Length: 638
Image (cartoon, rainbow, N blue to C red):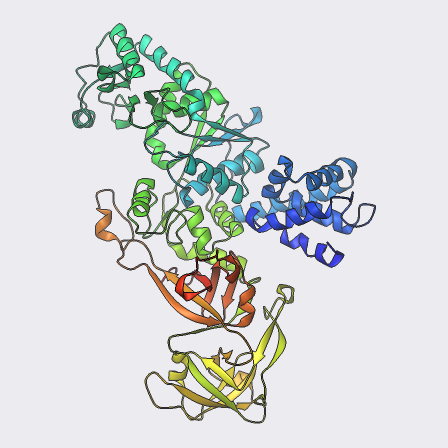
C-alpha cells in the first residue's frame, strides 16, 4: 500500500466488521515484511491507524484472534513498545465516555446505583437461539454491555439459553454471535445453558428431596385452569420418593415420564400468578438437542434455569425487560430456597414500535409462510432486517443508548429511529441520479450552450463534503427526465437542470404520457430564481446503469397488536413496491452495503451492486443495481 492509500484508512476503520474487514486484510498484507506501516519508527500514520483500530471493538476483537498474523503482530508490538501512545488512548476513551454521557443527558437517565457494585459487576445477555436478534434484544444487549464495560469496569457474559430443542437451531446461535459482533458488543465469555444440564438436574433433585418440587401429570388445559383459579393440583402432595421415581422416569423418557412434568412447590393461590407452582422441567423426546443430541429426554424451563445458572456463573446484576417483573419474586424464591449466591435484578422497558411485533414466534411464522424473504428481510424488526433496510450500527447504538434503562413502557413511532440514522448518513452519502424507466421523457437540449458532442466533467459526489470524493457527470444534447417533472412544466417556463444551469421549456409534445420536449439552455440565468430544480441524465455519452428501486411498508395495519388479536387479520396486503430506473454511469461502481442519496428521491442502501451477482443469478433482466429505500424519519415507512 502506498502512503496515499494509508492516509484515508483512519476514517474507514470506524465502521462495523463487514465494512472494515477488507481494510484489515489489506493492512495484514502490507505488514508482511514491515515492522511499521510507514518508515522505520512510530510515525503519524501508525499512530492514527492504531488508535482507530483500538477504538473499534469489532476490530480489536478480530485482531486479538490472531487470524491475521501480521496485523496482530504489529498491533501488539505498538501497544507493548510505545507507552507514549497510551496518553492518546486515554484521551480517546475520555472522549468516548463524554459522548455517552452527552447521549445519556439527551436521552435516558443512567444514574443507577447498582447494588454492591464496588464488589464487582458481572452482567449477562441471555438470548434463546430460536430466531434472529431483533431490536428488543439489541436494547438488552447494549444496556448489559454499557453497565459492564462503560459504567463499571466489569464483565459481560453471553449465555445462549438453549433449553428447548424444538425451537432452537445452530443457525440462530451463530447469527446471534455474529450480530453482537457487528454491533460492537464483545462479551468476555460465551456459554450455553446446556453446559449446565447436569448441574440443573442436581438442583432439581435437591428441590424434590427437600419437598419444594413435585411431579404432575395433569393435562395442560386443566393445569392452566387450576393455576388461574388458584386450585391445588391433585398431585401436589405426592411423596418425595414418588416424585424422585417419576423424575427418573422423565429422565429415561419412558411412557410414564412423558406424561409428567416437574413443578416448583411455591404457592397455590398467590396473587402473583407467576408464583403458582410453575413448571420447571418438561420432557422432549421428539427433537434432538442441537448440542447434546439425545442424551437428555427432559429439559429445564427458563424460569428455573435462569436464576440457578446466573448465580452459578457469577452474574451479579441481571438486567431484564419489564415483561419479567412479575417473575422477579419467583427468581428470588429459587435463589433463597436453594441457598444460592444472590443476584440483583434491574428491570428496563422493552422497546415497542407502532405497527410492529417482536414475538419471535410470530416473526418465525412470517418467514415460514413466505410473507417475507427471510429473517434479514428489510421489513423485519430484526437487527439484520433494519441493517438491510439501511440502519447504520452507530445510529442504532446511539438511539438505544439514548432510551436509557427506564422502566416506563412506551410505544414509539419509527420516525425517531430513522431520524437518528439520517444524521449519520446525510453528511457522507454520495449523491447520484435516477430516472424511472417506465415513463422517462426524452429531452432535446438547444441553445448556445448545448453540447455539440457529449462531454464529461468532474463533480463532487457530495455538495457539502469534498472528502466523499468526485465523479464524472456526462453532459449531452439529449437527456432523460422523469414524467412527473415533465407533466408539471409549462411552455416557456424557466427551470434549473441541477448541476448544469437554467433552461427554458419549449415544445412539449402532446400526449399522456408526454413523449418528449425541448429545453433551451440559459446558463446565464439565476438558479435561485427558479421554482423547479430538476434531476436529469444524459442519454448520450454514458452507459446508463439499470436499477431496481424498492420501497417497503409496515407488515401490519394496526398500531398495537394485542395478545388476543389474530395476526393474519392485520397483515398489510402489499408491503413491497419496486420500480425499474436508470442511474448515472458512476453508479456502476457501487457495491453491496453502500449507502447513497438519489437526488430528490431519498436515501438508499445498495442490496446488490453490478459486481455482486453470481454467474447465472441475474435472470432475464441481467445485472442491475438493487436499491432499498431508507426511511428518513420524516414520515417513517410509506
